[in-house]
Length: 313
Image (cartoon, rainbow, N blue to C red; front, top):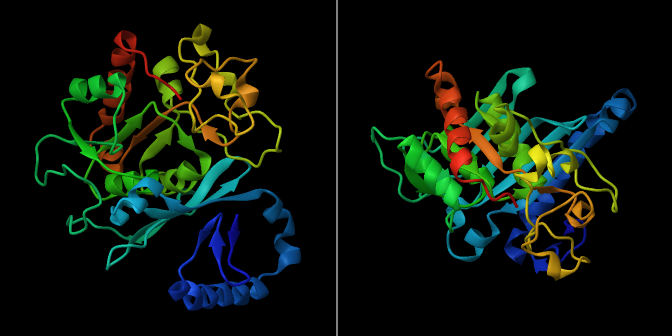
């Protein structure tokens, strides 16, 4: 829960530093002015089809451990379940970088760190013949490790989904593929931005199982409504079923489920906005530079998965 209406301002249980109060007030007043200029009656029906996914701090662990350059603020605009517009903003560097995009409008804008002047990732090798494979800063699965080896790439470590996608846009990496789950607010904005720039972001499980790109469904769900990925739980006789983790398990569910496979009977205990089908993302360079580049990644994922199943969570 975010409070930016009454001082002191807070994000959930975290107090916003007082030095930001005046800036927050200024931005809020500007938004209020814009809202007064909008013809609500004309756009009333359109608004009903739109949902916003906002992540005020993407890369919380990095934010708390001195890696603020890897943190982003994310805004995703969703229409009837599909991400249509987004913003990725890195606020911490002295010279903030950002990317804005809407594929349907053929619109992109931003300030990207293409000269690698900001430490937004580790292990970036400028001018390398090998391409960078963007991963989390932490441990990766055996599947991901074998995939990096299969593709002949080197690992680029970065925090936050938004920052990882920014690294793809900046040419610091060419793909970002993982079986570990995140949340809808992590991917809604970045997916819209990446696809506006010419890249792709989809569920990994669809690539593994059927060799196709399949977007997550983004929509507002009721409190007790099941996760949107129900149809993927037992895909191909359950070989790619995800497992429960502390991150995707509902707060009121038994912790005994952690580590166990999600089934049709237990998916009701998965948080409704958890992405439990992995991420398959490739940057504009991989999508546009070579006619078979995207197919190269799809083929490699399928081949590696035939020997080492992904661990979806």
